[in-house]
Length: 161
Image (spheres, rainbow, N blue to C red):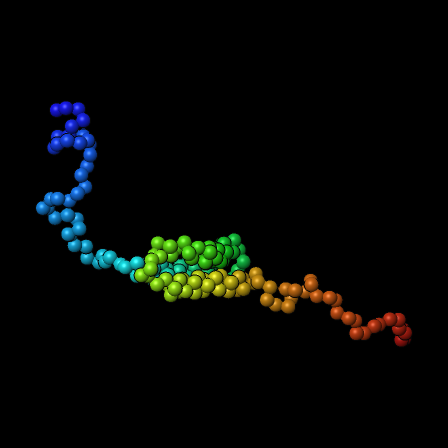
């Protein structure tokens, strides 16, 4: 055998021919397994749009388990509940980039995604309020209020025996 000649003919020794000229059924002819379906890009976009709902339920449960007292775990869970929706809201375009196509309408999935993440943000703000970390009462702003005007004066007096 000459160096540089393939066994089956001329060409490179280690070249692979990917053209399918065989009579053997290829993998494209095999049926999908049960429970597997090839989803359209629009269906996948809806799945991505509804994924924050799972995160919302998990965060709600974790915040409930953390309780209403201010300690390291509850503050960490609360700020995680605030951070995740904020980072998701900043990257909406990047998240839906794989589904961008002229045939796929992405407005409604994006709006659902935004609404669910805003709901997660509202859940985090509600938890901050229940922990007492939001200044929502007048007593939270006492240091910035001017001192009240004196209405009565007292001074001197007589001693009664």
